[in-house]
Figure 1 (cartoon, protein in one colour):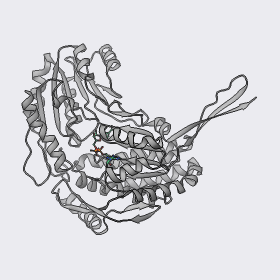
Figure 2: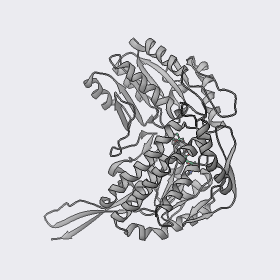
Figure 3: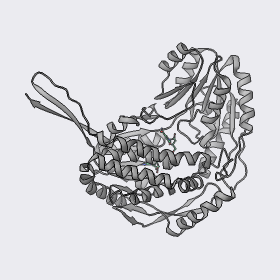
Figure 4: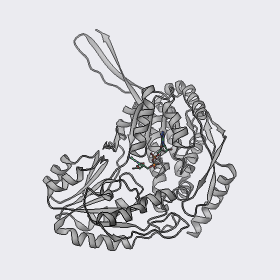
Length: 487
Ligand code: NAD
């Protein structure tokens, strides 16, 4: 902890000195500011520019002006620049991880990996840039039909406060590889690493105006971005209700939207499962990253015949999770992003009791400083309780028992969300039936969430619209064009 604190100190001093400006057409732009606090001790990290509609307009114009040259650059040239960004991310990975841990409260042990995953995202889409425009050849008796793809134009990217660095790269890398220019509006609660990423990209050779950044609040800068006529599409990661607002805001300009939204994801454990592995995975998927993770397994569905034992082992493990300063490599759960979010998470402790559930572990919030909560397990829950239906977005797991396969499926699907699901069984035919019946965009069988970048990422129902990953990302950032030649 002491060594990480010492390593972070010069970066914090630099941030305090410079603050975080917008970056428009390769230049810093400021105006009114707001203070950005660390969730660890509420100290002010730095002042951050508070974007207005006119900042968004300037950034959108810059992205529009830079678009033709970036679009027309060869895919191989774009590939080279994006690989240089990946190299620079790797070279700065430690600084990124330290700053992100301090800015978000998410433990350094996970942030170190998130920074490297950001580099991997750039490399993955860099390699695909040369073939992004490739189309198909669909001859008919009278026409030689061909399709090609063209980048849609300047796009808006709006990201949330959880794992902000990785999520920014996940959206921006494919947009740039496709030939789009970008205006990014990072989350107001964790803007530090988005700024580092921008600096890294420009130093690595990204031309000015190709990627612009406007900081500030969702209702001001974010809203103006979704309404701007020069912005052709919005890639958004955040809450379901914000997605709904963005869809309405973007309607007058017919925005294409891609939404990665909330989740209340079931982990379904059958009695024939490899229980020690299922236990490890269930714990990892809800208590890592502070439970502030869209794909977290926040609902445990456990078969009645094994439930007493499984829940007892779970409660014992949860009680031993190490809560502490996110810069400490031993810390497993750090402070939540801000006081209001902590108040939201802890409000479920009273709700659980009022609804008749049992707090089998945790259920407390240590005194500040820092927005800490104790990792919590609710047992004896029914699926119609608020603790089972609502996205708590903290280190809080709700355990619900089921009798048989049919009931497991019914409970798993009885929810507005449908992002991920996890199934644990040794019976492969049952796994096939259950995965076929589950209403979720992504399902893992006998595994936690392991991302493989060519596979599709996205949710159904209130968890999202559209898919990222592999060529799916290009489908969003590009238009398919048909040309028919008479023969
Ligand atoms: P949020 O919806 O409050 O904010 C996300 C972003 O949207 C922020 O940058 C915010 O400023 C902006 N915003 C808010 N109102 C806006 C508006 N009216 N117009 C335009 N922009 C606006 O979400 P959050 O609290 O920052 O993040 C947590 C949520 O994100 C959780 O629900 C989580 O599940 C979800 N999430 C989903 C995924 C996924 O891949 N499905 C990944 C990470 C997080």
